[in-house]
Length: 376
Image (cartoon, rainbow, N blue to C red; front, top):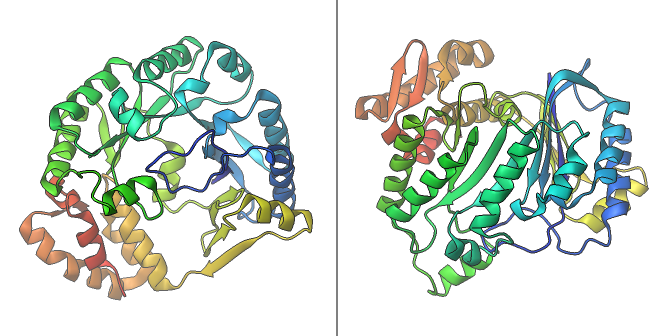
């Protein structure tokens, strides 16, 4: 089992909160597609053999800027190099305003069976603040159109903790989200990343962030609302109706090998991490010479242990203590349990049935808990 991620590094405009790598100029689109296909040639043996691709994820950037012929070209290259599982989950990230009836008809015969839509808010004030291209009405229309086009596995992204946002604002967003009938919700607390416009506005005192207590109240409301609607909180920021967990993202959290193609894409083969150069120009130039422009890091036992602790605690299952001992030995298992004891006593960690998992109050301080359980 393995996953495939293709990073489409083009956007029509840059959102004020986003620090993912993308460019707004699209003159290099066709050379980029050629380079991605060539990277598949160069890295066909990267994944452990035999490698059956269980999940494919087109992320970005804005993959919905690509047309039908662009996707056909990439899918043709994929099946030349790897075997796609019969029930492979194939996800397209899309901007709502791109999902016109004409565009959805282009997707009809392509193998996409899951849409991940970057809605971020159902409030036009916040959409304008974030420099999103769509309106709240367009977002609702896009979801309805995708459903009419036959998509039965739709995820939307929302952001909470936006400047000046109230708990009532956030509740209204969630109520609208559930009214649309989507199967999956990813909800992220706003972070002010270095280099983004929102961070500059914050540093210059031109906006007021939501307090930590306000962020916590919004997360508690999120958990209450999703639970009441039958969504399982299967990861800290991800909620799904039964049977609709993101298989691709779940593979990251369970240590499944995956290959990432395109500039700034990351890969993991079970032994090392690798990440491509964060530049379309440098990426295309290097691939043309037969070189993959990437850095690589071999993972030590402690690196593997730290990754295992971090991603396991993000999931609803938590840390499987028996598996931890199998993978890393008795010494690291005992170290983990010893570091966990203060959090178990405080109720921020729950130890039961051979697992260590975060309680709701533990999730609110999850970064602290994870760091204390890691091995420096």
